[in-house]
Image (tube, rainbow, N blue to C red; front, side):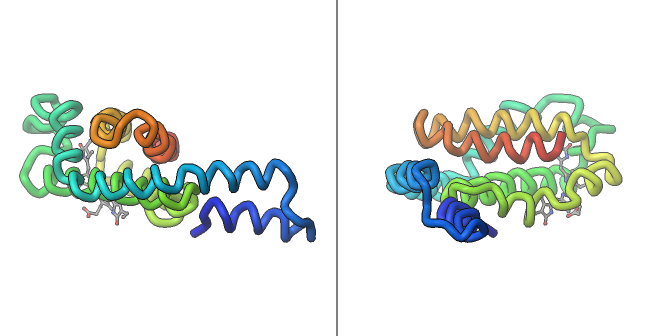
Length: 161
Ligand SMILES: CCC1=C(C)/C(=C/C2=NC(=C\c3[nH]c(/C=C4\NC(=O)[C@H](C)[C@H]4CC)c(C)c3CCC(=O)O)/C(CCC(=O)O)=C2C)NC1=O
């Protein structure tokens, strides 16, 4: 896993150079948003289950996905979907704190699309649910932090698509 600091330092190190202006301004904006990130992570962890519930209500409940024949039908599969949504939220929160998406590649997206395809989990519907979670999260943490979380929830969405 990388973060905003190690990624800037690693790329300077590869060239054997001190950080240049672009690298410094990346670091500066990461440090300037540190408080915002920590506050957002605190709010998300306090409301994680209601954020997931809100996103499921918005995107999935009373759709074909939850009806007989749908991939969320049966409590086992419903619970698996809720659990996946919670994984997406928790790992997006880690990535938002780190200011870097690499943890998503390593822990979430690696092999996920193939797993979903082999189990018949609908990827397009999952992406819609993640997009709904983006909106619900922004409602909890506010627009600025919501935008930051959006970067990483979008990263998961595009990694699945
Ligand atoms: C931390 C990283 C991590 C991720 C991301 C993860 C995902 C993940 N989701 C799975 C299943 C599943 N995922 C879903 C999810 C959904 N079905 C829908 O229709 C909805 C659109 C969607 C929820 C948004 C369902 C229903 C299953 C069970 C499918 C089945 O067994 O038939 C499985 C197969 C094994 C299992 O059932 O536990 C994995 C590995 N596991 C991990 O360890």
